Amino acid sequence: MHPATDPASSDPVLSLPPIKRAAYSDRTAVLMAEMSRLAYIPFEQPRDKDLDQVIGQIRASKNDEHARNILNDFYRNYRTAGQNEARQELVNGLARLGFKLVSTYAVGETQAFLSIKEHLDGRGSGAPGILVLSFRGTERKVQDWKTDLKARKTIMRLSGIPVHQGFWEAFNLVRPKISSDLAPLIDAGYTLYMTGHSLGGALALIATREIGSDSTGACYTFGQPRVSGYGFAQQIKTPIYRVVNASDIVPRVPPSVLPKVLLFALRIVRFPGRVW
Image (cartoon, rainbow, N blue to C red):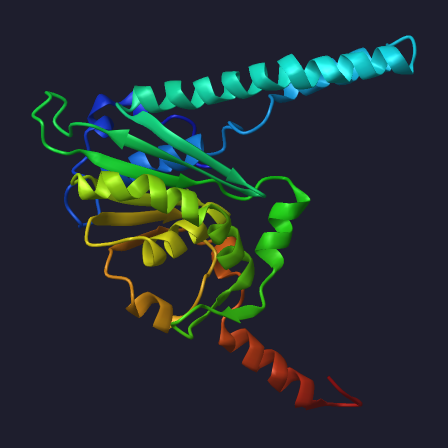
């Protein structure tokens, strides 16, 4: 389930949370939840209605040549128009929160966007504002579920700490471009926040560890699955706030060592008449 629809626009106070402090803030959490929701806007692809329209035209075409012309026209016009429309939806959503879009990232099945708020007080004081890097979560696509389920561990470079392989590989698809875009903004004094829902939360946590710095304010995740263990967390100085629903199974994936121990015990315990 995605974060709630547009919570920040209903209360203007939520657009000015105390985001310069590291302590947890409900108002900051609401802002980050809205940023996580905006990440689901398909800014990297045509809108579904454009695709449905083209499919309908192809089905009604008179012959193969006519169908090919429709498809070629789609790639020249409809695709670009759909992307522009979706991107504008993202720009408009950020504008309601007082943010501007810096860049979008879409490599493979990993999507994210970087946004900026120039002045925290809204009065143009000249003081550097904040950046929010938001990662898209799991969608109804086979590749996203493959990323979630790719739960065997791999050794991260240099540190030797095991980490969920699917999440690690997904983050590294967009890492170079994000790092390049962030460098001048961090040098200019902007404070960076990370956020994401579900799979996006896992990527936000990895990003906090890998590209975060003393300029990182906090990382807020929502329904985030497990990424690694205690050693991974020890190397993160940035405050991490992991918001979960007690009945949500996603934050418990992949399972910790305790269920594995219990399953092993059940395999060797003798019950009357058979071995389980």
